[in-house]
Image (cartoon, rainbow, N blue to C red):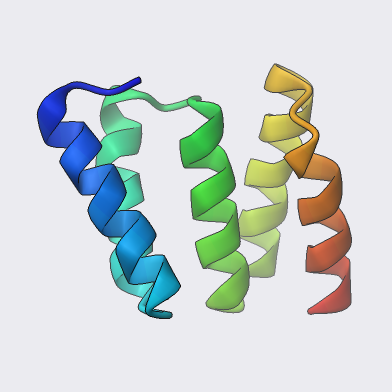
Length: 86
């Protein structure tokens, strides 16, 4: 998936998300996104973080990318969730 350094950042981002530190999780995912800009796990993770932070429009853009680029089933759930927190 990712090289060792980025894998560590990804695991830290997941941990931060679980602890509800969404801004920190998003910052780590954004860093990883520089090396893997359209990776489905990064798109999904960032969209979740942004949604939790109330940055709905940005989250929708990433959810749309997840759907159009990867046909990822998580995009449907993500889009529905974003509509609820509007």
